[in-house]
Figure 1 (spheres, rainbow, N blue to C red):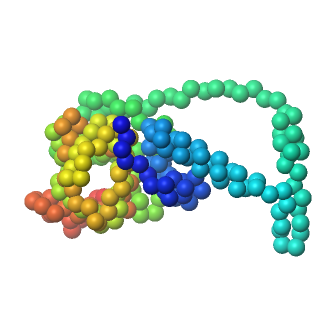
Figure 2 (tube, rainbow, N blue to C red):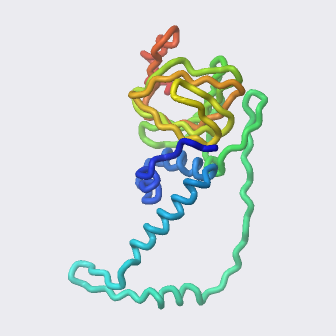
Length: 220
């Protein structure tokens, strides 16, 4: 069961098209998995559409524009068309001999080859979105990410599997927003695949991983 969702304000910005591309993709991927947020977005979209047509008279400067909505609908519906239903193709990838199905929203976005470091593997999406970086992160069974905080913010969508940290346990579909106020050590028993968006590097807080902090800006 999905327990962690985007905040209402973020869903409102998503519907309004006000978010960066990578964050939009993250939310769209979560919505594919989450009936609760699907319903919320449907209601928000309907509300936004209603607000565009809640009057019959539009003032444009000193010009009054009369809009006959009923005639507008009649003009559209007098045309006939044949709707062709195309089934979405499932995009499957294999990491560490484990197959995973990716959200449909990721299907046409190019990715880099996997970069492996111990039980961690990362593939970055080729998406130009300012300082934001979107990646797939795979953690092998019995693997973990060293204890760290965040120099910016990090959004994680759990695509498959589960992991836990000091704040709780996360399952498929959970949408997690963390920043410099959070310090944690994600650990997975059976392995997991995450979609992540980061605005800056991680800041490691313990052990040899702290040696990566001086070059963190170049590898996030």
